[in-house]
Image (cartoon, rainbow, N blue to C red; front, top):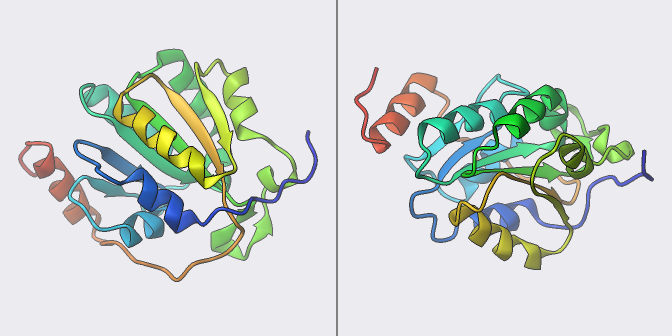
Length: 198
């Protein structure tokens, strides 16, 4: 393992807002907790799929969505603790390589929802290197805000499966709570894709 790298200096809300500029056909899946609050703070949208009580599932939900909607870019917003719980998902995703899927790990090196205990990422586990070892075709670590714009362009271009670890400051922002009614979120999302509610 590398040295202690407990997060970074980037403002998580600025990162997410930057990724969502001119979102066009972008579909977004957000992990429970802070990634969903960040997504909501950037503006509620019919094509936002917020997850509740599903730790470790965001990447796989995004993977399924990318397969079902191959002509649209899919962004997964997750945290380091949440993605560490779903490492097996990354292996499956790497094998299938959906070209329209981008996974962004907002890495503050802590478990923000349970009291800011250091996560494995905060103790040196490097998720971008794990993705490379799992044979992701592209993975990177972003430590400067200037790296967000090229990432945004890349995901809209559907330039291939990509994982980006964005080093954010270990700070809890005020919660911007998205809708908590799962049936409502699901049906709204389905309608935005042109399907009838189920």
